[in-house]
Structure formats: structure tokens, C-alpha cells
Image (cartoon, rainbow, N blue to C red; front, top):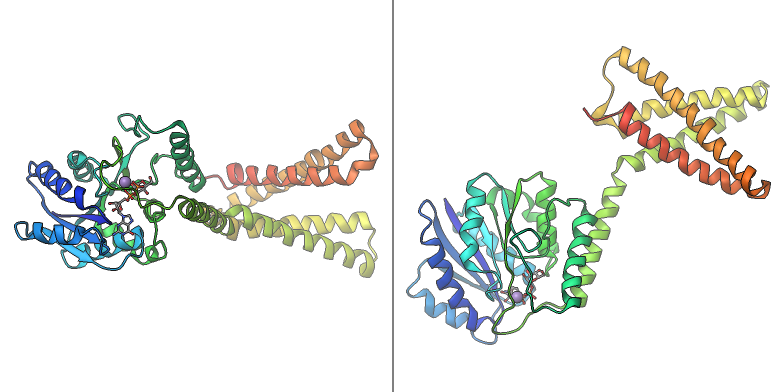
Length: 373
Ligand code: GDD
Ligand code: MN
């Protein structure tokens, strides 16, 4: 297969040729693939471009893209698109140019893909991987905490390293997310990329890497902008997930049920002349019926009940759950609230009871009535 390694550079004159030589030596043992190298240089003022241009004379597998500086994400995307469309690479890879990513580990990434992974991610936070010893405690904590926020915040905790840039993946997966990537011009690109791949259920495997500090030149990361972008990404993805979550649908359905209950109560009492107690009983019965059906066709539609028998059984179960919730959990909370703290706070106990009721209902619905098979 054709493998293309994308290497973004900005003022990496002292590093880039050492990297290329070491990398080429490392892959020379890999027989079954062919390799090309795409250096994306944003017109580095230190003359990185000229250094590469000179190197290219003897290395026809090295390609140089020059452009204006628009950030790491933009540079990576340009390189990836070039490798995918012009070089017809089957596997795309990326690494930093400053030797923080040891090129001698690169064959492990290829092995991971050869063994069936869709993406191989260099990881500092798994056994065998590491961050530099010489980093101060603050920096270490910052790195670990930052990564954990992303890892748990996005909810794919099985991948341990989200922010690094040493990776390889199948072109087919890149093409599926390509259009979504242009919004991430900076370092947050790495996080967005991994997240979007995971959302496609890609098989991601981690390769332990020992991250070392660069020897020449300096880092181009702008920490405060980076932190802002990362938090914004995690926050907006979380809220997007919530807006489409079954919990939100469950709340909407329940809100509609409340309206049904209230309208039926009023109509039956005021226009039909039924007593409020009976009118409410009718209203609640209809509301629960509406809740069941809306949850069945909308909130939990992937787990919709199929046969008529199952429908009736689940509906009965649903009525019992609802009654249990209202009588024991909601009313029980009010009862104990008053018993322990007095009558004044009854409305607060009602609110707490209602919150507990919602949690109870949601948990019971998703784990029992519409349980995953
Ligand atoms: N073309 C281009 N344009 N290259 C860039 C740009 C840019 O705007 N910004 C950075 N680079 C290149 C650098 O020249 C280097 O090869 C690589 O991208 C990483 O940049 P560094 O400046 O070395 O970043 P770092 O070491 O601080 O950041 C590392 O850790 C981050 C957080 O874990 C990298 O691994 C990042 O990818 C990672 O997000
Ligand atoms: Mn670096």
C-alpha cells in the first residue's frame, strides 16, 4: 500500500532533515509498503523550505507544499488532501517535525494498521509511553488533566491520548470526515480529528510513545488560545450530544404528558362536571399512555417494542413504574421532607421529589422497559 507521512513545519530548519533521514531509515525495513513524505511548510522565515527543496533533489519521494501560515490544523489538512488526492495514498500519517515524535517508532503505527486498526494513535499515557521526565510538575499535571478533560468530556475514555500529533490512519476514514475538519485551524484539529473518527466507530489502537522535548527551535503553540479552543470544542460537542440525547427527548415527552394531564383535568372537571380527583385520574392515565407511545416511537425508537404481546406487557409495566414513581418516590420525598423538616418547605420537597422521579423513570425506562439487546 501507499503510505504518506504529512509533516507540518514552521521554523524547523535544524530538525527536518534529521527527521527525514531517521524516518526513511526506520521504514527501509518495511517491505510491503511504499512511502512518501509531504512537508507542509508555511513559508518559514528560517528557510526550512529551501532546506527541503535542496533535499528533494536527491529524494523524489519528498514533496513540499508551501503556503501562508494559517495554523497547524490548516497545514495538516492541506497535506492530507494532497497525499490523498495527488499521491493516492492508502494510509495517511502525521508527525511533528521537531523530533519530539521518535521516527524510529513509526513502523509500529504501520503494524497496527496492518493488523486491522483503522487508526493508530501515538499515546503518552499508556504503559510504555511517557511525557518528558524534565517537565516541571505543573506542566505534567497540566498535560494529564487537559487530556483527561477531553478524554472523559467527549466520552470515549478508551483512548488515552487526545492531543498528540503522531498518528496513522486509513485514507477512507479521513475522507469521511474531511469536510468537517476545515473549521479547526489550530492545534485543536488533533482532538476534533480523533473524535470524529471515533464517532464513525473506527477501530482505534494506541501505540506507546515516549514524547521528548525538542532540542532545536521552539514550540509554536499559543497556550491560552489552545485551551480556549479545546474547552469550546468539548463544551459544544457535549451540548450537541445533549440536544440529540434520549434524555432530552424523554423530558420533552414528559412535558407533553404534563400538558395532556392538565388539559384533561380542566376539561373533565369544568366542562363535563367530573370531580377533580376522578378528572385527574383520567388525565394521568391518558398522559401515561401518551408518554409510553411517544417514548416508544421517538425517545427509544432504536429499541421499539415489536410484537403486540410485548406492547401490552410493556405498557402495563410502564403504568406500574409511573405509579410507583409518583406514589413512592415523589410523594414519599414530600412526606419525609415534611416529617423531618416541617411543612414550610413542602414545595421544595415536591421539586426534589420530581427530580428524583425523573431520574427514576429515565433509568427504569432505559435499563428495563427499553433495554438494549
Ligand atoms: N506548517 C505549519 N504551520 N506547521 C506548524 C504550525 C503552523 O502554523 N504550527 C506548528 N507547526 C508544526 C511545528 O513546526 C511542528 O513540526 C509541529 O507542528 C508541532 O508544533 P510544536 O510547536 O512543536 O508544538 P508542541 O510541541 O508545542 O505541541 C505538541 O503537543 C501538542 C499538545 O499535546 C504537538 O504534538 C501538537 O500536535 C500537540 O497538539
Ligand atoms: Mn514540539
